[in-house]
Each structure stands twice: as C-alpha cells, then as structure tokens.
Amino acid sequence: MACAGSFGSLALCAIFCSALDVSKGSAAQVTNLPPVLPPPEFLANKAPLPDLLLKDKRANRYITGFPVIGWDPQTGLNYGAAVQWFDNGPTDSPFFRYTPYKQRLAVTAAGSSGGSSRA
Image 1 (cartoon, rainbow, N blue to C red):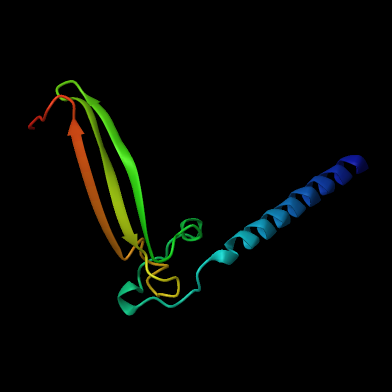
Image 2 (tube, rainbow, N blue to C red):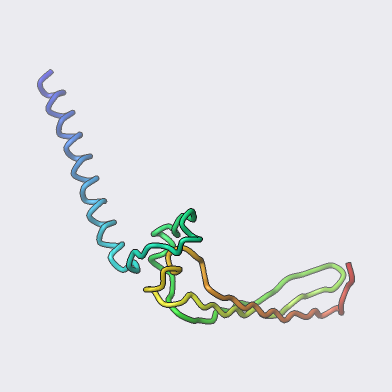
C-alpha cells in the first residue's frame, strides 16, 4: 500500500514538473511578440490576433507569390501565377495586434493550353 502511494505521488510530481517545463518553454517563445497597446475605440470589442499567429506576423511591407496549376477536361492544362503585396504596418502600431493586414493587393494571371471556356 505504501509503494502505491509513493508511486502515485511520484507520478503526480512528474506531471507537475513537466507542466512547469512546458510553461517555461512557451514563455520563452512569446518574447518576440509586439508590444501590447490599447486598441483604437472602434476596435475595443474586437479580440486581438492569437499569439500563435502574431509571433510569426511580419512587420511593414512584403510580397508573396505562388504558381497556379490545374487541369480541366474542356480547357486542358491551366497555368499561371498569383502575386500578393501586403502592408502590415509597424509593430508599434495599435492596429498590428488586431488586424491581419492594413492593405493587400492581389494580382493573378492565368492561361490554358486548350483555350478559354465560358461558364
């Protein structure tokens, strides 16, 4: 009976200590987050972006792009490219924690090997 009690408290201690280690690791990961600023009044009821997304959010402007490839029985091979320009603003902006981006511009060009089709 004494062994079972010792084993139970040892297991509880191991679980508690591992939980402490996890919380220490997660606290170390969130140090690169932007400063917490109060939102503008019209955003007071909006929840901020989750820290999981916010820690990887880029500041200021950047461009992304990706290829567009597909197949359609009527038009054949479809191909193209999409480019997106984002402006997230500076990290010290009160909007940075509350909006996914300030401005976005998306441009897509596509073609096909079999001509065009109308829907």
